[in-house]
Image (tube, rainbow, N blue to C red; front, side, top):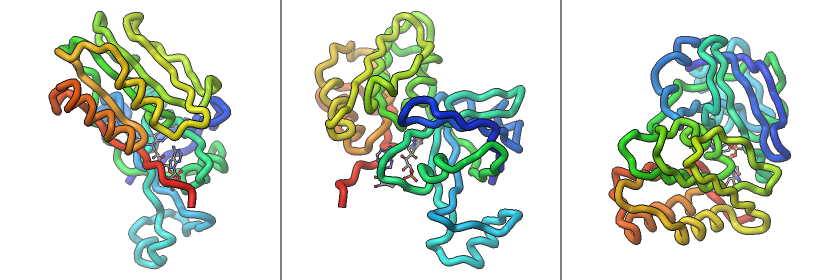
Length: 249
Ligand SMILES: Cc1cc2nc3c(=O)[nH]c(=O)nc-3n(C[C@H](O)[C@H](O)[C@H](O)COP(=O)(O)OP(=O)(O)OC[C@H]3O[C@@H](n4cnc5c(N)ncnc54)[C@H](O)[C@@H]3O)c2cc1C
């Protein structure tokens, strides 16, 4: 388990909050999975109004409190890292359904402590691809933006991002050959604009590498389309659901 102190909290856009953490494990920031563009941490967050005795000890919490009070694990991508200051930046999409992560990021203040599990990552755009397709939503915006900013020089890329509205767009420092397309969700169901847009894209199939992460149903559909309709080999597609849309009760 790792710990970090909150160094900065900033409202980036109407539906996005940025938190900069100064980690107590600076060696992590220099090495390991932080090199992957989709590197993420798993935050341990108290559900509802639960508080834990200090110093925080996960084993003690599990031994003494009922399961419903144990910390919940929520994954957040590292948007930036600074090995000099041992800081990592996480961007939180603010959604209306609430949950431990959304609750935490609305209340968090500089100086607060947060606990998390060792970072993980699995992807970085490879140099040998003929074209990169990067697809995401508000939750995978950090991973898609980081991938776009680390595209090998001279390779074409199509970047598709679905966000709530034009206010949620952000500057992505991608090479000139990357075509960045923003889709504004408005009243559409999450992910539907993305699936439609991917189906209508003109893409080279030979040498295509794809990174598709976001709402689980949309990711499954896009992955299936790339595999079965476009013949993209399985090992050239990185795809996973970052969250799942559930109908309002
Ligand atoms: C590897 C990985 C990296 C991720 N990186 C990021 C990141 O950098 N930034 C980020 O914002 N998210 C990221 N996510 C997604 C984030 O972990 C989830 O959205 C998480 O469920 C939010 O937790 P919560 O406690 O707010 O809500 P939960 O308690 O998990 O869910 C409560 C309710 O909210 C709904 N819900 C959850 N997320 C959303 C959403 N985005 N929009 C609408 N409804 C939602 C759920 O369906 C549920 O009904 C990542 C996920 C993974 C797996």
